[in-house]
Image (cartoon, rainbow, N blue to C red; front, side, top):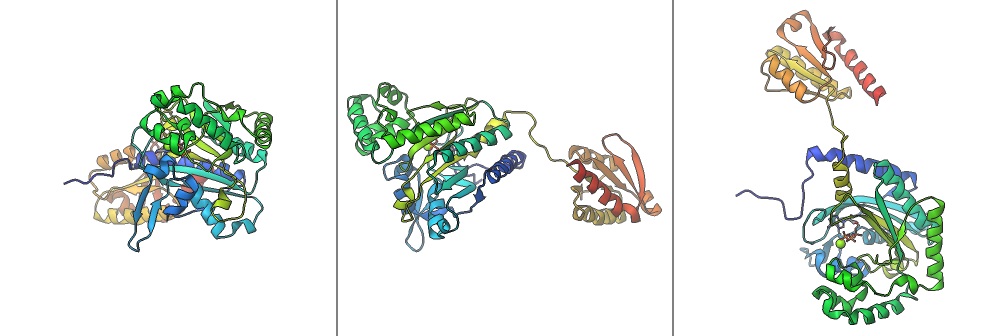
Amino acid sequence: MQIQAVRGFRDVLPGEVALWQKVEAIARSVLERYGFREIRIPILEKTELFSRSIGESTDIVEKEMYTFTDRSGISLTMRPEATAGILRAYIEHSLYQLEPVSKLYCIGPMFRHERPQRGRYRQFHQINAEVLGSSDPRTDAELLALLRTLFEELGLRELDFQLNSLGCPSCRPGFRSKVAEYLGTKRARLCSDCQRRLMTNPLRVYDCKVETCREALAGAPVILDELCQECEAHFLSVQKNLSLLGIPFSVNPFIVRGLDYYRRTTFEVLSSDLGAQNAVCGGGRYDGLMGELGGPDLPGIGFAIGEERLVSILEGRAGAPTSSLDLFLAALGEEATEKAFLYLDKARRLGLRAEMDFRGGSLKAQMRRANKLGSRRLLILGEAELSKGMATVKDMADGTQVEIPLDELESAMAGWKEACSQRG
Ligand code: ATP
Ligand code: MG
């Protein structure tokens, strides 16, 4: 019986990889420009790390984690997000002793047992960035500025930056009880999940995607009316700095995000090019989390971009990069084939993208193969060429041909490589 991939887990095929590489290369370039350094953390962590940071009564911890007991009896979880692991590593290696503010990024797979659909998978990839050690509202604005630069360089302009503040432990509890009170009156109209959330974590209702729950929220209290003075000043300063940098945004008081650790600034970036799953990026501030995880009491803020969704927006556009060949070697006869095999390796060691077809076949068949692979040049090594100690090289674009003595072939190939590098 044929074995298929696990539901919600996808292959990225060679034809699609170029776009992923482009996205990641641009992301790395922009992140490094804004002062971020890469950190690579494990996929498996102790389950407790996630239940403590993300929150016991969140969807992720309640029903989406890939958790199992390993052979030594420890409960492990495949990371559903990156912030918790990055903070764990930051604390474990005392990175706070190195710099007052650390900017870290990480690119890789995340795992959540959600219902698979377009734009929603069980293994998906995120580009994560975290700034640890700064509570300055400029840091919040700087992160959004980074996102603007990144999306611009990817050629995405029609994006909607939505912003909210979730307050802090001094103003959120008051808001929370108002929400519980309000939603209590709408109980019957809420989905069964939200009826349960009402008891455990009423703010989670704001994140529900069920239509009737959204309707029930129409007249709900908004956190922005309840912010304490410090939180309000912080939020206003974030907005002032965004305006200073000319970053368009809108305030959406319903953004609560699906993780409990957020405090103050939270944001989402939405794209109208996506269907129902329209969030390309989510993030926010999590001052207090580091202390809860046993580290120093340092503030933090970060974001996560969904790479599948980013790639799918770009897929819809023309001009996806294609890879092509510098040289195809066609040979006729055993002796010539042996020589061609040797020059194939020499070409590659000189830095050229070179290929030949070990099945051999007629010259015509080999030329067809060269065309199919989009090769710039065709090197022909037949019996006639071999007896003269020459190779014929054809420029596939204009059809011109030259003969090159075999003992000059290597330096000719080095020259082609040089020309490729200059073209970029
Ligand atoms: P959503 O509201 O779409 O469920 P989320 O709030 O759960 O997203 P985060 O945990 O903040 O998302 O992750 C940040 C980004 O990661 C999202 O904006 C989205 O682009 C992407 N993402 C989240 N879950 C998935 C998934 N199951 N499959 C693909 N991408 C995802
Ligand atoms: Mg989600």
